[in-house]
Length: 432
Image 1 (cartoon, rainbow, N blue to C red):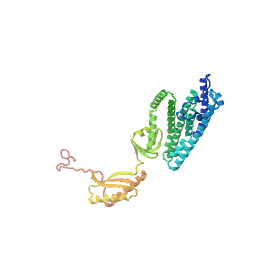
Image 2 (spheres, rainbow, N blue to C red):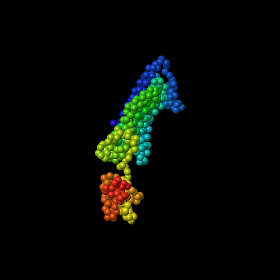
Image 3 (cartoon, rainbow, N blue to C red):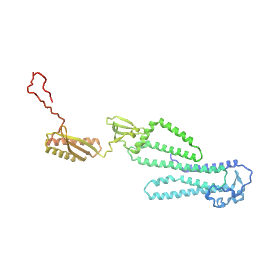
Image 4 (cartoon, helix red, strand yellow):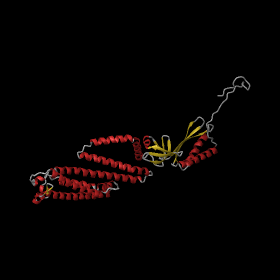
C-alpha cells in the first residue's frame, strides 16, 4: 500500500500544535509565581543568534507594545506571544509551500533537459518531505525568539529533531521503493523473473527494517537517550539469531549472489562438481537442476556461491576436438588427399564457423590427423545431427578415395625352432 504524505503531514501539524499547547501549559504550571509581568523587552530570548541584530518590534510584529495583549495572560504567558506564534506558523506554512513549489519547478525543468530517470526519481522523492523540513525549520526560528518556559524550549528543540528525522526517514523509505520499482521494471525483461519476484519483497522489507532501526537509534541518541544497552541487546539477539539460522542465512546470501552475478538463468545447462543438467528453478534456499538422466537434483544456494560453475549454454559455439587415424600403409599422397577431403567436407557445411586440421603425429597404430571444429550454434540436438552428417560424408569420401581408417592392432611374431615338432620333448617355442 502506497503511503500518502499529505495526511501524515497534516496529522503531524495537528500533533505539533497540541503538544505545543500542552508544553506551554505544563511549563506555566511548573513555573507558577506571584512575580509581576516582565517587561516586553525581556520576552525576546537569544535562542536564534542570527536574529539578535533585528529590532524586537520586527520580530514580535509590534504586538508586545499593545497593552491589552501584554497584560492578559494565558497559561502564564502574554497573549501577544500566542498571536505572534500563529503568525509565524502561518508564515512557516506558506514559506514551506513556496520552497516546495520552487524545488518542483526547478527539478521539472532539469528533468525535461535530460534523458536519464535519476532526476525524475529525485522529483518524486523530495516532493513532500522538503515541505515538512522547511516548515519545521522556519517554525523553530520563529518560535525560538521568544522566552518560553524551559519545557517549551526543550519541546521545540526535540520536536525539530523528531520531525526532521521522520522526514529524512520517509525520504529514504521512498527512495527504497523507487529503486525497487526500477529494479522490478528491469526484471520484467528477464527470462527468470520468477526468482526476482521472490527476492523483491524480502529485499525491500529488509532494507526498510534496517532504515527504520538506524533512524530510531540515531534519533534516540540525538534526543539524549542512552542507546548503548539497546545496541548491545540487538547485537546479542542478532548473534543468537545468526547462529540459529546459519544455514538458512548462507543459502539466502547464496541466492542474492546468484541474483547479482547471474552466472546462469532458468533453462541454462550448467555443470557443478559432478552435476550436469538444466536449471529448472531458482529459489531463495536452493536451485533445482534436472540432469541428463532426467533426475531432479536440489542444490543448496550456499553451494552455488562456493563452487565453480560451468555454464554450458553461455558458450558462443560448440567446440569439438577429435582424432582421425588412417593406416600406416597409406601413401603420402593419400595422406595429403585425406587432409584435403576433410577440409572440403567441414568447410562445405553451413554450420562450420572455424576449423583446424593437422597431421600432427605418428600414433601407435595410426597416422593421426587432429581436428578442431567449431559449430556455429548452441542447440545440442542440432549439433549431434550435424556431426552425424559430417561423419557419414567423411566415411563416403574416404571409401571412394581408398583411404582406410586405422584401428588399434597388434602384430604377433612367432619365432619357431625348426627342430621342434609335435611329439618332441620339452616345451614349445616361446611366443614373443
